[in-house]
Every structure is written in structure tokens, then in C-alpha cells.
Amino acid sequence: MPPRAEHLRFVAGTAVGLLAAGIGASYTVFARWGITHGLQSPDLTVLRFGVAGVLTLPVLLFAWRRDAAAFLARWRAWLLVALLAGAPFGLLMFGALQFAPASHAAVFPFTAMSVMGMVLGALVLGESLSARKVAGIVIVLAGLLLLSGVDATSFTARAAVGDAMFLTAGTLWAGFGIVLRKQRLDPLLATAVVSLSALLTYVPAYLLLVGPSRLMQAAPLVFWTEVLVQGVIAGTGTLFTYAKVVAMLGSARAAVFPALAPGLAALLAWPVLGHVPAVAEAAGLVVAMSGLILAVASPTRHRAIPFNCRSLLMEKHKTLADQLAEYKAGFKQRVAPERVTMMEAATADLRASGVEARAVQVGASAPDVTLPDAMNRPVRLSDLWRRGPVVLIFYRDGWWPQETSRRTRPEPVRSSAF
Image (cartoon, rainbow, N blue to C red; front, side, top):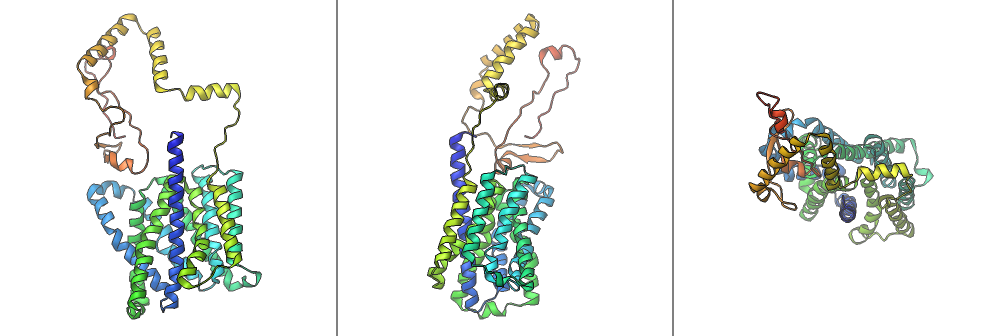
């Protein structure tokens, strides 16, 4: 990727990451607001999963109608993201609050998200684990501790159960990012799969075990505010923005952004809950932001390369035109002159036919085509574009003239999908 395009991608990914952290903060603050007005954690969870599942259902239906075979072929990946970021994650996060104090909720799950996201990214995806990135994560976690005000007296046997649940939930979320990156899943489609899975599992369990009485008794302002924040903004936005930043910046960098949510929540709680941020909370946010900048904005350093390695690197990064020119010169030395003349004549006839003018030109949009893959399953080019850059390799439909002369019935090489 050219440096300018890489820079723009980094800026856009950072903006999406900050948006994801802001959505996480709003979800946390309005959850506390809803609880002060008579709702409980299971009620907020069912709104989040239920509304998000209904809103994203058309995305699944569209993907199914467009290419059901391609969607079903990745059923293992869809099942995995549903288990990692769906109902199990929500149940662990909300269930932990029954054991551990709220101050622990601002530290332990986000610690697991950041640390495990960095470690799993290095182990599974081979992402760089630089000293600068590790230092940035440590500073972010220090900011979380300062912001939350965790003290030694809060570490009890009962709190340890909740902390273990928080750490498990954070690890699941980090694994969600790893699967997204490794499988190159479409962020919107992954959001729809997770939301629908939770709609089909958590919502029926809630109606059976808890019932909708508290939701029905809530004031209209409280109910519809939570529908908007928990279901529309957080339910769909948290998953989508996090999946998007994973695709743009990688799972290790993406895992840092959720750690900003507690600090942003402290600021948002001021106008919503009337809670004036303390000096420690403001300082914790500043420290966490400093760690984020250090971990995410790690520059690419250009070190001196030994002469022999430099020559290999230059050879690797030659332009296509240079490589073709070298190959052509070497080819003319290896092949008999009459064959070179025959091939040059064939090339001239091809150019005279006007095929170059009719071909797709540099900078033009490629046509959206569908071709069979190695398993003879249809693959659409636009589906691959959504996952990232695509490289097309074109095979000849017939043998070269000199090969044809050796065969009575040439066997054409068939094109395969991308």
C-alpha cells in the first residue's frame, strides 16, 4: 500500500476506534442511568440483543439471497464469532457485576481485551509485538487503574469470581477480533450473525426466566432511550465499529481502543448522571490516551540493511515493467530466433486487432464477475472486495504456438476464480 494510502487508512481506523470507544462509554453510562430508573442488567441486555438482532436481520437475508452457498461454506467462522461476541460474552460481563464491584468492571475486562488481543495477534496472526506497543498497553492499563480507583480492600473471594468472569469476557472479545482478522469476515455481516445468534438464544431465555414485566412498567422515556442507546447504537454499533477497526488496523491495535471506554464514560457521566469527574478520573483518562497514542501510532522504522540483504530487497521490489524487460531480454537469449520472430508477429497481429483499446484500462473499475473456485463453487468479485485487496491472476486459454505444434489436441487451461 502506498505511504499516503497507508496514512489515510491509519487515520480512518483510529477515528473508527475512537468511535467504538465512545459507543462503549455511552452504553455504560446509559446502562447506569437505566438501572437508576428501575431497570436491571438482564433487561438492558435483552434490549441490546433483541433490537440489534431485528435491525441486522435484513443483512443476513440479503447475504443468503445473494449467495447462500458461500455463506454456508463459512459456517464454522460464523459459529465461532457468535460464541465469542454473542450471548456468552454478555452474560459474563453482566453476571460479573453480581460478584465484583463496578470499579473492577473498568479494569479487568479491558485489561484482558488489550493484553490478550496483543498476545493472540502475535501468536495467531504474526502481528508485530514491539517494545513500544507493549509499553503503550502498560500505560493504558495504568490509566485504567488510576481512573477506576480500585483499592486493595475490594479484592475479596467473592470479587475474585467476578474478576475471573471479567477476564474471560475480555479474552472472548479479543478472540472475536482475531477470528475477524484471520477469516477476513465482513464487519457488517459478522455483526448481523452475532446479533441474530443472541436474539435466538438470550431473548427466549429472558422471556422464560425473567419475563417482560419490568420493561413494560418502565417509563416511556426510559424504555425508548434504552432501546435507542442499547439496541440501535450499542447493539449494532459496538460490534460493527470494532470489527471495522480490526479490519483497518489489525487486532492488536484494535484491542487498545476499548480501554478508553471507562475514561470517556467518566466524562459522559457528567451531563447524563450529574457525576463530576474527579481529578484521578481525569488523570487516568489522560494517561490512558497517552498509552493509546504510543501503542497505536507505532512508526515504521527504517534500519540500515547490509549490502547483500539490500540487493535482495531491491530485487524483490523491482517494478513489474523492469521485471518484464529483464525476462524478455533473457528469453530472447534462450529461445531460437525463429520462435522469437513468430511470437513477435503474433503480438503485432494482436495489437493490430484493437484488443488493447477494448481492454479494461488502468484506473478503470473492474467488471463484477462470478467464476467457480477450486471446489466449483461460485465466487463473486465484489464479495472479495469487501474483505480487502484482491489479486487477479489470468491464465492463458490455450497453449503457446510452439507448444501447440507439439500436441495434436491442445488442452486449454481453464480460468479459476480469483
